[in-house]
Image (tube, helix red, strand yellow):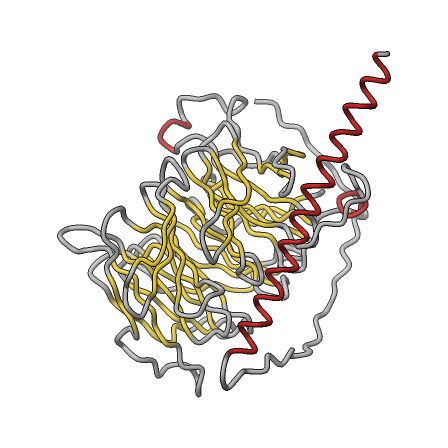
Length: 72
Length: 334
């Protein structure tokens, strides 16, 4: 019975979380639409050209790491 | 998560900022210096020398061309990111506490402190991007004096002609910078000083931190409070993670009470909270004093914290951070 109760609670919690995420996602989509509308409304709209700059990616590999513990 | 320790400041950090690509990290401090670092290895790329007082605030434009800084020496300065040269300097009667670029990099907003018979002021400057950047208008395009509680932090809104401000009293407000009118406010956004305000990438929402130990998420257009994160320590900074539904909080006791508390008792961690569920999900230790400022790389691959201890720590997220799904398969939009 306890186990049943537990799964019940967690199912409730999962449902609650799902509701919160759905609520958030709906709001985000709404925000995006508002932004698009605002940009359309702007006269002399500036086209944000995405400058395609090459960015070097460094790979930082740890060969050896010594950790010293200094006692106070 | 192996942190990189950036050693170069001699006094506490006041603000840190990543550039848009996340490869550069800018930091300013009470030691009067601004530094720029490579975020991948912590190597110092250069410094911006010239301020004669605590540098309270910095912001970098989206092209990594111009850097703005505001200082206790009562100046706002424009720097060339690449050369490290100061291109222009504006002087005011009081200290500059907060500065921020707009989305299109052609305006900045700044707050000057209310002090010694001078009213606090919010100014918007048009920034000319022509030529080498040394020809700027000496006068602001807009200036107004908010009445009531002092403004501490500011940023441009997603709504044209509007700036959002956080105040000493805990108030959060929207101003029309052309008329100086307070268009909207939330007097009870926080119960104490608003210490940080960071916008989401599209500026439709923002996060604030406060000395009242809480951080809040607000909708930009009407200041509706979306989420609240209540901690047990005064907060100095709050940042939004990108690509993951987390927020990062930093704080600790006041600097003056640090010496009376043992280091072990100190709560000098960066806390990770779930943005939607308002639950703490983890902590990262490191600083030997309060965390004053936190920034997350726009790439979402690392974050940095600047402390009262004078150090900046850069943490690159490891694979587990990206793979972990502590709440199952829920997709959360940024």
